[in-house]
Image (cartoon, rainbow, N blue to C red; front, side):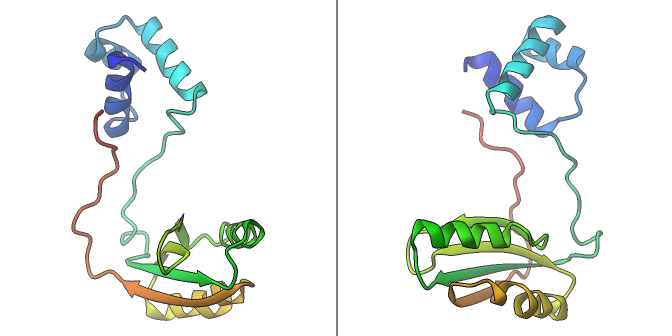
Length: 151
């Protein structure tokens, strides 16, 4: 990636719906070479998709919970089985393999505490191989970035 590719990525992170003519003008290329670069960045997996950012509270999911999970075993099979199971849960927005005392951290969204309790008991705790969980509820979002730093 060169400086132009980096500039394209930086602009698309914040303005995903920008017209190709405007993007090409801002990065100093004509539209055709700019479109080729965007396509190459997509093909290379640098740009993984385009989506709308939405307000989770306005969609009825105002509660965010981080759930730290300790597994009974940390084998590759156990990790893959856990990942397959939680990937089916729409409430799980992110899932990270961690170092330290917790093996996994999930970011979960819910309508309210009752909704989260239902998710925990009826879904998450039925996943085989979980030793224990510890949940932390967010009070408010202090910083939320949707764009990676410019590099």
